[in-house]
Image 1 (cartoon, rainbow, N blue to C red):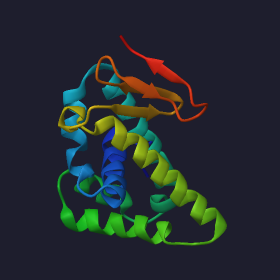
Image 2: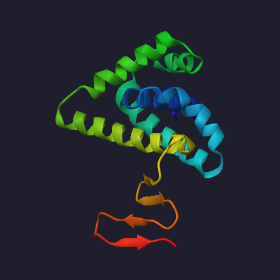
Image 3: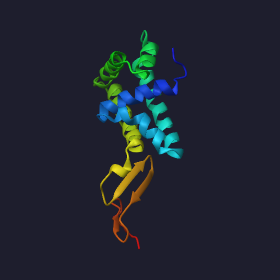
Image 4: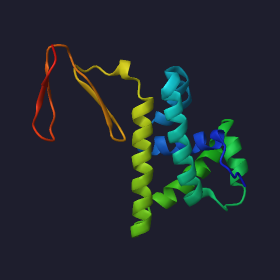
Length: 158
């Protein structure tokens, strides 16, 4: 068994999860992460490991041959990737209370990872806000108002 989970195996798991919640995002995970550099790569690696460990514990641990399937999927095996996707899908569709909590955790981590890998230069917007855990980054056009919904306060940039 893969204990501790390697980054390569965690990356395969993260790709499966991203594709589940954000169609096509899994394909761009490695490319985008390598182009971001610095702190963003560290953030991507941390999120990939978090997703990998969570899904490994719940979906893959103890299943016969899953180590080889992860290795093959990392090398491009579509058949093994589909089997792994099936394991995840089975766990995500369970509706009992602990199972619903697992699905929420996976979706939350996928959203956080998706925020890190999305290419901001491809976003055509005047105002862009990103939320990572409890830190917010907001970029606005100069000399415009920023409205914070929480307490209704307004910040002016000059």
